[in-house]
Image 1 (cartoon, helix red, strand yellow):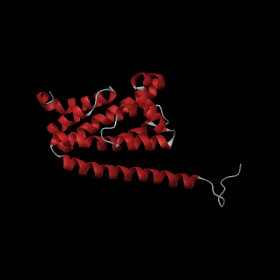
Image 2 (cartoon, one colour):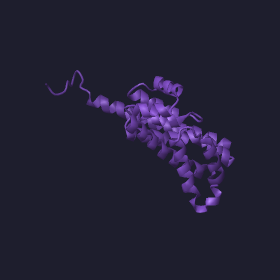
Image 3 (cartoon, rainbow, N blue to C red):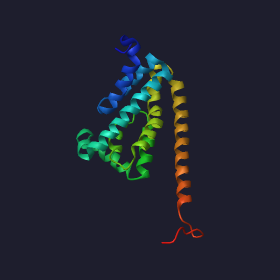
Image 4 (cartoon, rainbow, N blue to C red):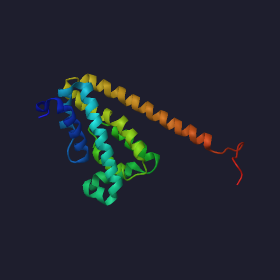
Length: 191
């Protein structure tokens, strides 16, 4: 069907990828594998990532906007319980969402809705999605592009780069907090 769209195929592919994130029961693999076949490993990964990130941000915003009761009607109870146990609060939620985004074949779409119920800011969630989504979907695109070995190598490199970016972010936050915190030798302003 995408092939028949000609020059509109990339746009339709991005929209299909975004829509499958927002409509939770639709798995992404049946979309990403043909994307690899039609657009190649790099092009398919870029287009699938664009759609998946857009859909992730929409799902996050919907979860944030409509709240827990709305999300609970859309996400199965066992899935919610599993995520709630992992998510926790504050920085733990950030780490959990980040690392779960990297796992191929993990149900990342419900995670986006549930992340909207946490204290994560939209900007932090968007950063997590931009870094994490490509890593989780590249193996499926690689199957379609007949580059499975390359896809696995690319996934390892993207995961390592994602980990390095995230560690840099954490280190920056740690240094910033340490510099802002009063010490015994510098107790800060009185009062």
